[in-house]
Length: 211
Image (cartoon, rainbow, N blue to C red; front, side, top):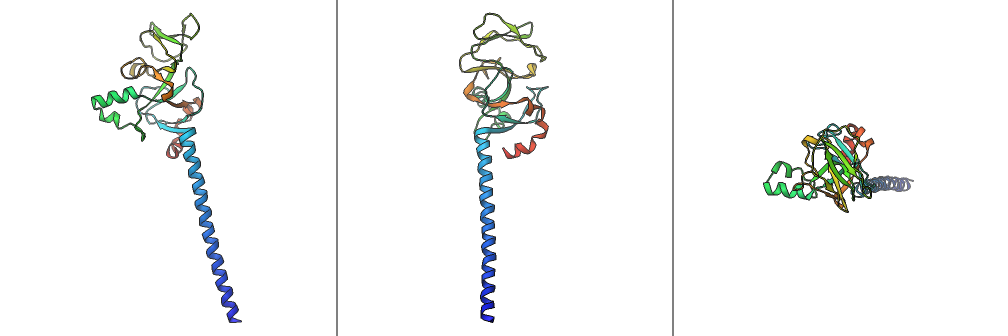
């Protein structure tokens, strides 16, 4: 009888070890799935950025967190995040270390601005107010916006490009500066920030940690 009891004891211990092993396997499988999903979202669907600087005030402020949708059509008035190669090269040329330190892990220098002109549009200012002649039309229309006035030369938005401005028109490096930014190639746009995200930007810090 004692021989049978020993065998039963060994079988129970083995079963417990197997259950523990299977539990660890399930844990790592779930962890792997979660990591894969987050990585896929981060790479292909969403990205999270933190605002640096004052160029988008009063819409966005320094250190605000933003979730950027990578797959959405760009519309006039959207706030977009894009890589600016011209500004990156300018900062490299003048050895502006503080700005170069803001590059992301891919070596890209990201800016956040508002889309004013789409391909085929012509943009200009009259008495500080922004006007647009939409592609295929002959008349300029003043934008209905409450941002500070600014001045720039009449500009035609080439195919495949955008004309962008910061909401803080008096303190923004944007398409008005042809040497540093100029027209933005659509291919360099990383994504669009929705108004909902802008409204909830103070609650997005946990998503920033994930993405």
